[in-house]
Length: 109
View 1 (cartoon, one colour):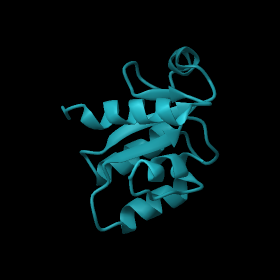
View 2 (cartoon, rainbow, N blue to C red):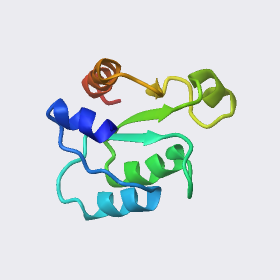
View 3 (tube, rainbow, N blue to C red):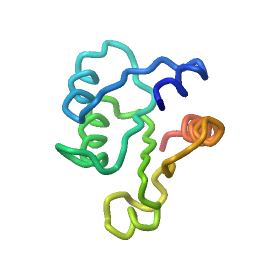
View 4 (cartoon, helix red, strand yellow):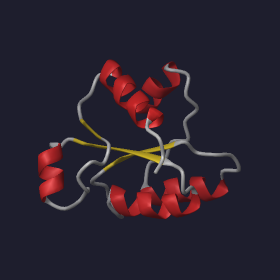
């Protein structure tokens, strides 16, 4: 569903069902990757650890995490740092579009 939301807004999407698949696709991809959107809690590894590995390949990549858990619970458990871009599931296409633009328009440090 999220992939379709991105594509309807004109974005090109590399989708993956697992963290391992996402890392393989990132390694094989020859172009740039502007954004990684990942669930926080997944089988194999959490989204933060996967993002760390993909960020090593694409240092300028922007990150957006999602979860059915609230941002307060995620932060309290130490899974994500404060200030990390986060959207709570379920989200609407309008909410995703607004959050996505905000993340992509943020200047890199």
